[in-house]
Image (cartoon, rainbow, N blue to C red; front, top):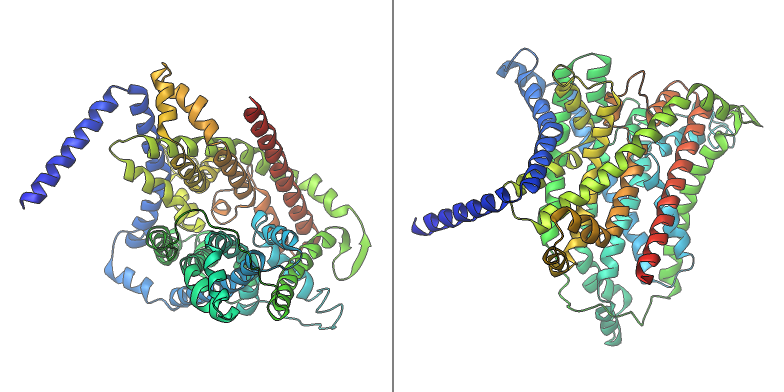
Length: 564
């Protein structure tokens, strides 16, 4: 008890000291309060509204109603379907991602740069592009099912197609995660084992794979989260295979049942948020790598044909499938009627730019506005977390993480519930979409910023303060330039995700503020595949141009700063 009292006294003393320091810096205190209020209103409060209406319902809490919802066969079927889909897609996606990463980091295989670039393509486009390609290739008028095999009644809708699509769409996430893990393992350990006579399989089984296990588990959880919260692919291709994300949407939009939709979303939140917390806090503290110092370069790259050739074939199959699927979208955007009349035409693009230009303009405008806000605010929060001590820091970290960790469907429903009435009647406005993009995408920028600042000696900023600069000048003239790479990572990520978002914004679009991803989905539902393909190509081109411009700015600023 005495130790507890001493601990409480120390904690209170420290908090008192932090409060005293903040009162001497009114601008910093105001900034922290404004950020906390912002995330409470637009991150915590909407999620609370989902929890409230899911448990209590629109007519108040009732145990019988809650029991009826939990035992509802449609709900239980959708829950099981989502979890099963997530597990299978996670296992397959992680397996492909691991082999892809192993081939690129550990072998002398040719074409590594090409395979790496191809693996990035699904990341910078909406995941449901692959579902659209599936219809173009294997649907009733599919180029392969009907054009080659003459199958008039090809049925591609259901769990099998969905697993294939999600594996292809999400394996790059596992690949990017595992590539970094494999590169961080000191290859001298493997070299030493080989020099002592161990076989390649023995080295892999006893050294490489055990050291990569934290990354494997992390990739499994990440792909599982992306799979169960996926909305676009199941909406297009799932058929009668019901998932929680789609059922939550249909309950609200199709049946106007907010409480049921919120309950479905809440059920989706539990496994997704649990997996996120495990990945974020538990696995991040686990490491099987015990070698200190800078890893040495491997002197013995794998060049045995019996290993390299199968991995090369796997990479060829994966990238060939990506090229086939994205190539079919490109081709489909340039023909009159897919599967019937393949005459070259630009009519699909004319249709999009004539009748659908508003959604393109809206997406580009809102992404352009939200991107710098998200990136700069992310850097400010990262600076506060790393460099400042204040009451509520843990609360700030949790509130910024929450919208990123929970599925987009939950965020969208939460925003409807929270901002559909006065005094914050924001639904249907551009403002609510900008806020959605900001709170959903800011976490990655904060993570990049905090990692960047941890590598910077605080004495650099202290020197600026000692020379008479205030906190604002120090941040913008010293700290922010040092976080330049993290800033532009945040810019790129925010822009790409804002342009390709669907699960949250589909609840928030309006007649005046429709978005390109929602337009693509509506074109697919209306069987206008050519127009949908044209939208996709325009979206991919916009994203690639934006990334190129941001990269040019980074390259231009970096050398200039160094020359000085």
